[in-house]
Image (cartoon, rainbow, N blue to C red):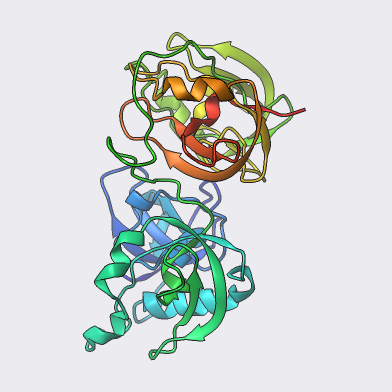
Length: 341
């Protein structure tokens, strides 16, 4: 852990000659986790990131295969908290008042001092939640830059190095959660392409199971994470999922697993906070519509997205958002939204 490594060949966003620090090995492929020296604009899932790695390093965390890694020959190992502090301070202007962040638990900065965690048990309830920065410029007793946020009323200092910019992409919406609407039979809505159209540049993503069908070929693995231009809106596959064709390969790529470059985030159909949309009724996906009759009054109306909530729990695994016209009372699947004219 922490050994200095270099890339011996290109792999997606990683280029031959890039230097980084080895973190850990996992069972998922590609399975070697590395913190690279440069910003790769990476978007790893929270569940995939090493639990003791500061989240501010996210943009530099990229997984590769062992056959493109070699030891650089440098002595010593990485001090990841120190790297995180350096990276956080270089990006201070991004963590300004009004910035949206996802909060993370603090990590020890001094292994010999438990107080260096700078943590209160009451803060745990906010971990993984999206918040807006309200105050900046504070440093705690261990010289770590901190901010205050809105969702805790500004009560706690949150270290920048343990948060990530943007909305959470993996919010845990379990049954009974206050954000989760009543499940029931679907009202017959349709999946849309969202903001993705012919000519859009997207990042290709691995398909998840829809109605127990992944529509996946192992040969597609080599393209996951690569950018490509959409050439055709292909319609639905046997699972009822819309897909596209892109330049560079001949495969069918599901819209629900794409990322629109420059807008939104993975799985959001290209939508972002502030977008004006027309709301659609939910369809049944993998046996679940996540729908309440009280939502019907808003169908067909124009709304503004106020928060991206991430993926819902369960087999449907649809991406959720809150909107303004219902005061955020319900969660809406972005797959059933269309851009407002």
